[in-house]
Image (cartoon, helix red, strand yellow):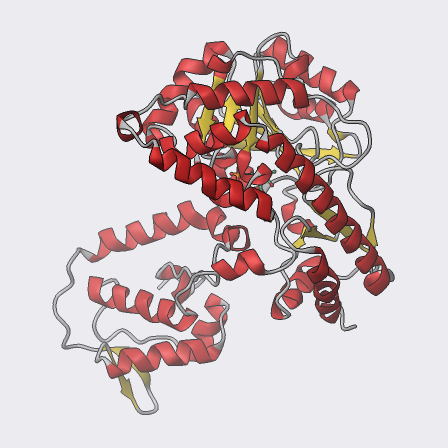
Length: 489
Ligand SMILES: Cc1ncc(COP(=O)(O)O)c(C=O)c1O
């Protein structure tokens, strides 16, 4: 065995703490597969439970339980004083050892960045209830009632046209409503034909990433930035160029200095994720000029722009673009609710056909019935009214959160109410580790994301990200009291 490679590395252990399967079950399952495939040969000695626990970074008791299970099922034998060994009387392996080992090692490498995503795709039902998880929304009784009624109406008029394949661009009625909304609210200039209905921002990013094939796959991302975008790009084979963000947004001059030949830039100009700053007008113009001259694409993620509480709203970058370089992406999963899985992209004409073809290759089209419900919700004016009501509700939740943080944790955290969006950043005053606080908070049932984890190369700031949109006002102060316990208060 290579001396520097641990047993856990050699057998490509991959433990997902966010997965439903208990950690001991995962260890047991991976050891058992290695034994059955022959990767772990008969009579091989297993490391001690203490050593393996250290290598994988889990508790020793989890490894002990896994070892006990393997022993009970006859996969291993224990020799007093000598340790635990793979049993010698097992059937022959199903696959050649070398091939299996290679596959395990390469799949472990390919998924290495995605393994870090655990906390971002913590999708158990309980994760939706836990304050202050990001991106959750509330729906009031009025919207819930309308939603039920519209669904019932659509089902009553359920016809042949709902049964077959539909337009992969999405339903034209919905695209027209989105065009009208975007023109009025965000200054987006487009025809309904340029709008493609997606499953949300994540799918739009994925489609763009897959379209930009070829030799040059350099893409700027914001540093710090939204990890779900960066990792979607990285796994699609892009070369990630992290570009620092300051109080004016992404540093365009620095981007040009580092990679002026990039194919695309992925940005959140109206409310930079996670810092919350808008991209200044000077930088917007600088970015558009660079994209026009170099032929790069600007992917504008305009998430949560519906929820603006004050300050001067900046219209979309897309509306300033005369050279058709901006792909504007928006989501209904925040304006309404994440379980909806509907969003849209406004695609420049030269890219439209390939974009739609790629969308069809991935999952053909969005669900016709859901689109019909949202189209009616928008056409009948309920969408605009819903946004107005939710904006006031979230504003109240934001203010309650800021007040509670200042009252309970003012000596630890510095916090300002954001002008837009569904989360805020609270900066740690005394060199505490934000990751350690986030871990401790989870033990008290509170989800906060560590700001420092969202940096790639830039010098990290220490802070906590707290989503306020998904939690009724009266639940906020008690949740902050639980968060305070993570600070030992
Ligand atoms: C920066 C950013 N963009 C987009 C989204 C929305 O993604 P989706 O529409 O895929 O749910 C989020 C959600 O948290 C986000 O934080």
